[in-house]
Image 1 (cartoon, rainbow over the protein chains, first blue to last red):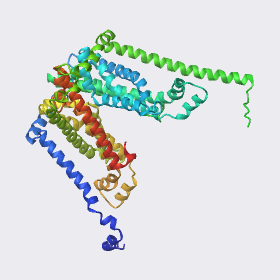
Image 2 (cartoon, one colour; image 1 turned 90 degrees about the horizontal axis):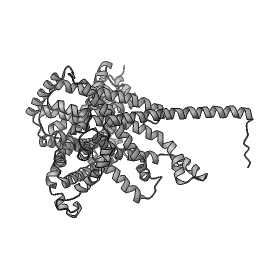
Image 3 (cartoon, chains in turn red, green; image 1 turned 90 degrees about the vertical axis):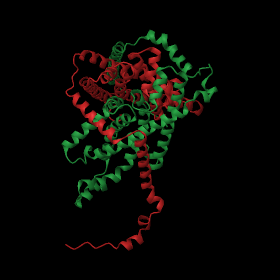
Image 4 (tube, one colour; image 1 turned 45 degrees about the vertical axis):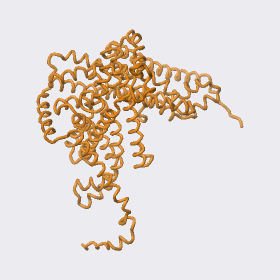
Length: 282
Length: 294
């Protein structure tokens, strides 16, 4: 076998100047960005009080906690936990449904093809954005002030925070709808409401149904934590058991949440495919 | 131009009509059955969640008046008439917001690096061994499914109160979420460059470095930026369980009914989140062009 010819690097450099002689700005941009990112990172570690000794002590503590968690054991409070889990699922289902019912009418004025003037659409969108910007847990705290501790506050918290998210998603789904059906209804003499009902809704509803199912799924997760601030569900039990250091019960509760989320995931993905077919999974 | 509509003979038409009606009836029946099932589930859920409409009606006024109260200063004026009084603690709050941003930045970066280390092992086309892939996938799933704030609660017990617990909680949760997304990008990558590199006798590491990484790094950065946005939201509540950031101030203000403080802190959080959303959106558009804005 013949040796490969040694490439003539000088000639190559001369022939492809823009590969070998890139301007300094282009060559330095990447390392500079990485250096800046690392500098902020180091500053952050320092500012947030990361100390190796503290970190290692914490890790040891964490290891001990993990050992204490095995095996998961609910003790005698299994019925209580099952009830709490039921409460969590109820919160997710009810909160999402109410949010969808509220979001549907509001999403219409937020969609460009329904309400062309910017002057209405813009405030509606910003309003939805600011609701979305506030975390579910914060809404839970606010509602606890209003209706008291308990799962009802959780339902209302999920309702409000999802109202923002679903309103935005619905309006996007409406904007993506095909205009031809609407024009067809108008051509045959339908009113504006007819256009929405018969031209738009048949296109939009399957997408919306898919999104609502997806949100029920993800809200099972949110609903399992809003109990931490006192808004009912399994999070309440979880926070309590962590505070009293009952680690076996903690691990059991975490396992319960994981299983519940997996089951809901499975059911809702089956339902989604049944409703909208494989193509339009949001 | 004339259009002829051919009308089928009566007998044929009747059969078709019957079939059509039957199909519609079946569809309606399915819809109604589904709706009935759904309503039943809702009622069950309403009982389970102790929904009490009377409470809601009695207290709904409170919800509205709560916003009235948080928008009123102690002296009875509206908050925007006296911004200096409203935002009296802005120095402290800005510092806490800075801490919140740092928590999410450091957490996202650690999470992204861990996800980067794990994702090649989790992707179907690059994983060196099936059992390894299985283990890594289950690990990522676990990190992703357990809510971040639950990790924060446990870490506060292990590492003590303070932002360190928040950072680690966010880092673990981001590892799970990003690891899955990263692995999906890798699974979509073109495998021909990998074959090319492997045919030169390169090791697995070199294959990943020179064949896969150049295809996927843009997607990685884009997802990491998106995750940063989400984490800013999440770290704003980490303080609720004592894991640092602005949440601490907020929960104190809400629990102790410092009404105007609540609105001031909420305003600052929402504005910060807006700014972060816009900046990362701009950055993503800038780095990867309009079409890469996932």
